[in-house]
Image 1 (cartoon, rainbow, N blue to C red):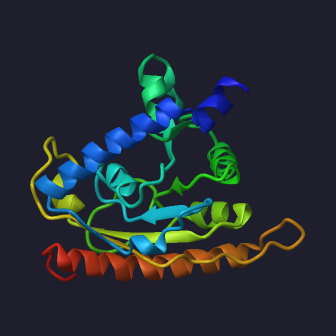
Image 2: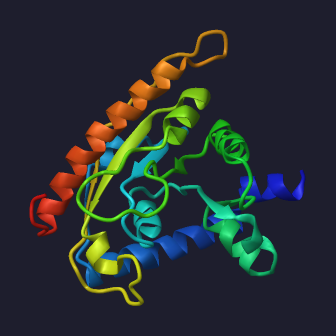
Length: 228
């Protein structure tokens, strides 16, 4: 197994135990310090791959995503972060896998599909980089495309309050209320001769957008945000 394949797999018992330990700490802090509540966990499969697609308003959305399920989630990370020990082992243990910064999207897509084909769940933020405000920004087609190519469902997640907890430019985590609502899985159509029509990908993206806005509105309201 190559170094990259090893980073993509990260299946050893020690790394999984480390992930569960860190997940326990993160979830405990979020539940006590930020009064985080999570609903809809029954919508997450207990086995098999899927894409978790959360709203993205804060750096803490990534650890929040790990609190949606006890299963280890996988995340993308810049490959430059893997250059030193023990950081590279820690990143892989925490579910991250490397993608070359500045490379074509094709590399990220291929590695994402590889993770899903190995049977593991993956977190992709369909808005791309962190955004701001109560309106879901136009989604990239990446999450829908990867889901269609891998033949897995997408699970939308609304996260209310994370922008107040740690928004863009914030240097501290504030004890504001967090509300996480996990939506029902969005199924993808079957491919035709191994190909997925662009229109089908666009349709999945449109469904994802609609569900994300609905879940985001609900989570924001429960977290005490004013209506948009």
